Length: 296
Image (cartoon, rainbow, N blue to C red; front, side):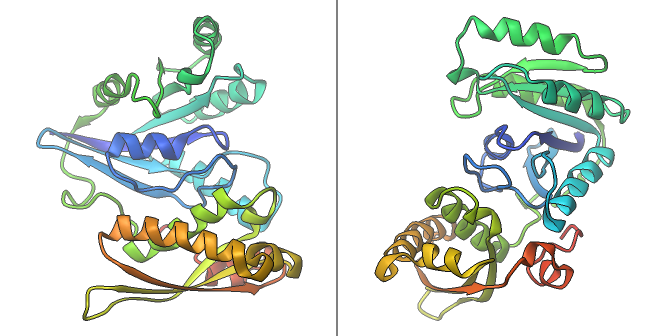
């Protein structure tokens, strides 16, 4: 059988997590239209009788401005250097940017084959697609280029076949019965963070961490989920809670429904909003909230 790892990299908001979920066939990573959604190196395995592809969803590449974001960039660089294949996702619906070319040049110098997924073609003018492909083809070191739409499923089958053509024969690199390396508890926390990213505007979601106090299954089959929503400022806490708690109630409802779908069980969700000023620049708090720079 063929097997190997594929590091999925790209600029923030390029559509990496959506693509990984589509390729794996199940939700292994949260997504939102905001940068900094993915903070960890998350493995998602696609396993059949003939092959196993382990995708590594990585944080989006952008200028680091906190200790947390700096660690996120290190995570992406480490994943790209420790993989069998790099899948560089480039959002082309606004045209190929200089930053995209610079990023492609960076990853092509690592010495690992690089496939460029020219993404979001479903929301770009058709006449612009050839123009983007030509520009990408001029980048030295790119092994393959394929236009895709994860949301519409366009060329996803072809992308899988292309990836497989670069992988070698070998054993399983991941538990064949598992879909992701992340725990259910981790995914529950990520679901909460995803709903906050979708609900709130501007900088507030980026300063939020989720800390799970209790995740347990009761005798009646209901999951108890007790978690803290950590933010950096008192005024952020007020916005998260909203007038008479309305905003928090709404996001809790969205999160609970998503958790129940993910767990296939009822969820009793309790949340608290707490302030930890500038936690993204404090090593002890980064470690406490699971951002210690180590893969799980």
